[in-house]
Image (cartoon, rainbow, N blue to C red; front, side, top):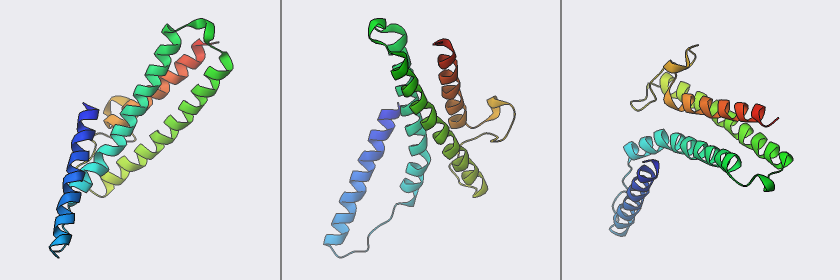
Length: 144
């Protein structure tokens, strides 16, 4: 689903580029598409998060179900640390983005309560980031 959404947005971008080239050719004012920009601004962090989470779970499954003879603890630890650092940064950025959307009263924003104690009330991207980070922490504990 995420890839389909990404391809559709890219197709819209191509169409916008074509329209702008045609307008330029006919010396017309270049059209702007603020709604498309808003949609891209809304979906890009979520698409990046889904892609990142997918890469983490894929890597974890390779370690869990793959060839154990080729695994080295130091490489796994380094990879987990890199994933964890990236996930923490992504979670911080998403938290800021959600707060920004809420404070500026965007029409397109993630629903949820950002600073609630109950994770089930958080916006979807923050839930996914939290679950991914928890998976990393649990995996780190299980390798020792």
